[in-house]
Length: 163
Image 1 (cartoon, rainbow, N blue to C red):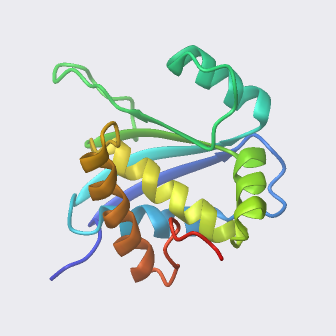
Image 2: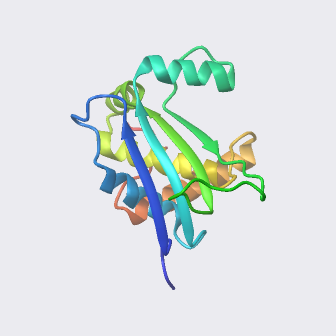
């Protein structure tokens, strides 16, 4: 079975200093793992932001006045809209990761920072694909899929409580 997309364009932008934050190649690998056999052609953007931008986005789009670790913005495209040059379908959408929140959570949870970025990237991609965790059943399904994807990347269960 062929794994991963045939064509994958992941644009990564850093609105914070890159020191300690994974490189675009890492984000691309994590996105490809999340997509696996689910989609064969994909275009998406990842933006790494500071707490001010993360807070502003979370307040504007979710009504929550705090920075959060990851936000996902699935593309909502009208079939008659002409895409800008260089943008291809399926345009999945955008993922925003707040560097300070991700770093703080990784430290609090005793996880390697890169593993936490991988988890939140996979989590964000699954949201772009339409998955959610609004109820217990959805959450269990999404978390199990995240565990499987991360395991394939050599990353331990992000939901396991550390003793």
